[in-house]
Image (cartoon, rainbow, N blue to C red):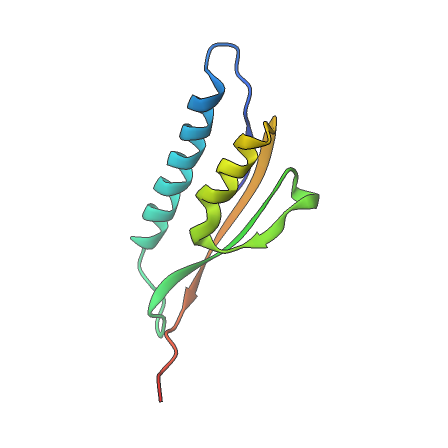
Length: 95
């Protein structure tokens, strides 16, 4: 998912647009986790980027997506860019 979320709408309040964005991301991640894993992979990991635009996006952890969206809300951004790319990963063996 590579998407620019616009946070302005003539009939929807700002808070509702923020909640819709968070919900859309949550549903996307849930759907991707339910897909079949390739041979040799243990789980789906996600490479994420967040910023005001695609050119200003920086890498973030998947667990920090909602925190970053809330931060954008507190700064009253008009839009934000979010990139969530699923990648198959394997667990590291403990010694």
